[in-house]
Length: 270
Image (cartoon, rainbow, N blue to C red; front, side, top):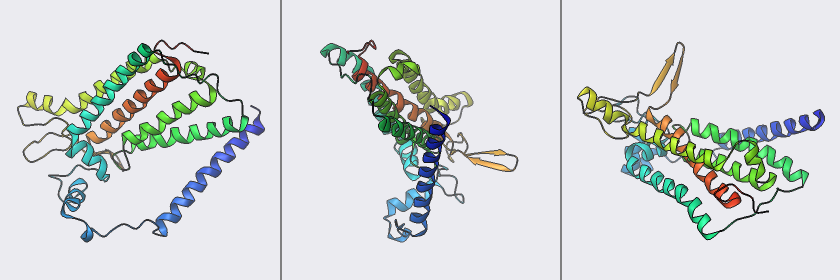
């Protein structure tokens, strides 16, 4: 790729980013998506809104302005763990099932259309930036599952447009993905059981997947990091849950992509 084409891609990417920012600014300031008044909410909604990010009453809060993440990881956390356990079983069983029935989806060596490849490069970059941003800020907007979905789509696009071998060139082998996936699940469980283990050692009460301290359970992950003049809100365990769950989603869906395109042993069916 010569410099002229490279600069064209950069300018196109900047134009897309500026367009997205302008559109977001217009939607926010024009109130195209109105926010309902709190008095119109039902009591359950008001309870969640008042307990997730209430600086004046921190005894029952989750320290996260993102209510959905608080509900998933604080209020119905065991359901979320069960969901990821099912996802884990799917990822582990898929290669064996696909091998047994002998199914192979041939994607070949990708497409030859230059426009499609160039557009895909831009989309892949955007998906990567958006996915990482959503995962890291999962305690403030959306969450790790959504961010992981963005990046998992990126892997599928690479396999379809540039061919399956591009995954091998970047070191995205099935065996390596499986190892990293198991590691991400173990780290997820480590964060989930950190507080009850610490409570047993210290002799106080603690719960599985506990995030912030409670009057009856004084241990917690904290909610902010003070760096001299800068205070960073990380909402305790929610940040780590979102990071590791995002990785789990990326790797799980990547396993399915690899299974469909390359088979269990990574061989090609061309």
